[in-house]
Image 1 (cartoon, helix red, strand yellow):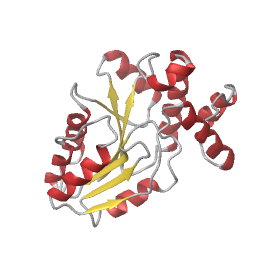
Image 2 (tube, one colour):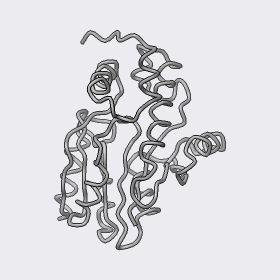
Image 3 (spheres, helix red, strand yellow):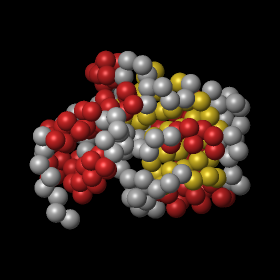
Length: 226
């Protein structure tokens, strides 16, 4: 079973895209994030054998929002713990069998390169772990195979939300003697400079299926001068 899991937050102003909100305002930042989510729900609706939204917060309001927005996805509430604990719980829940392959992504990179998930699932046939390094020192994708249950230990003792996440994760993988493969470097969209990069990539690739994100950005002037 090939499972794609998308970690996502209910797009509540002031609780999402907080770095972008510092310059854009909470409502506008949350509006862009909602476009990210809705575009990804459609864009990735046929990936793998099963698709799951790991949503937060684990409230009835959030469940109802995602139930309406992600009709073709199964829903799973993330537990109230740190990111490592939530990721480990996700793999325990959805990647328990020896033939299972699970790819987990966040929701901050709506324009991931086409074919990323096919490549990740293919690599998991011969590797225990697949990582997609991100420009901020973390990972935009983590993939595990169920025949390597010790791989869940890669989430232990990692300083989450720091620039050392990727390095520490790789060190954990090596210490566990797991076979690792990497995908190309990519980036999250968390700042005005990264929004400007996204604008440029969307302008260059008119076939990228992100209609809501395109329409939203078309209404917002590009103020980044970095």
